[in-house]
Image 1 (tube, rainbow, N blue to C red):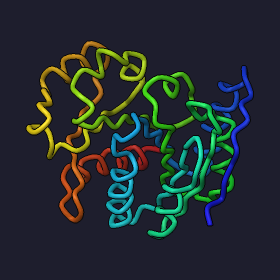
Image 2 (cartoon, rainbow, N blue to C red; image 1 turned 90 degrees about the vertical axis):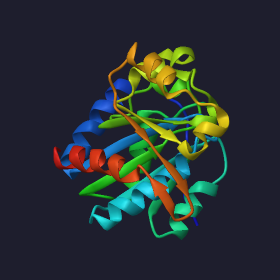
Image 3 (tube, helix red, strand yellow; image 1 turned 60 degrees about the horizontal axis):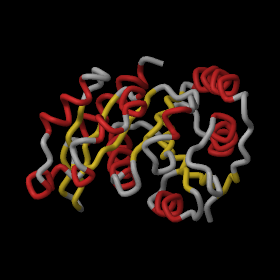
Length: 218
């Protein structure tokens, strides 16, 4: 059964907690990766494929799941053999550095990668430093190619962009050039095109290369 942390927000001290998290992660030789995106962007499916690829490379990974309620995604990771812990925000649209630290301490991973699957939202998570070493946004092609123009803080904030469900690009009329132009007005973050359809997977290895590189730099 999933371990659950209930979030009670403490205002004004987030940066202090984030700095403390950075020190702890460095001591533990852990890369923490903040995965953000809209509801339905494919964060969980992408993460499962990515954790599987890292496992093949001998890199331990675990997941802290952020949701308003439920343990659905956490349970699915546990069932596949990954360490996972649930943070329930009970209505808040983001998670903060303090509750991430509580979850991290319970997860018990050292010398590996810890992913935070943030609450599905393209606004609030960009406002909260968690002490993470890498920030990734997942953007699905069915969401549309105009998101960097509409959600400027989020797309300014991230270190990498993962386009998900790219097998649907033609069907939904996703314009990669238009999307990239909007992103480049804000950020020079790399863009990775991916899709996961059962055993048919594309682009995950390239994202794993980025994660592995950042992990080895700690």
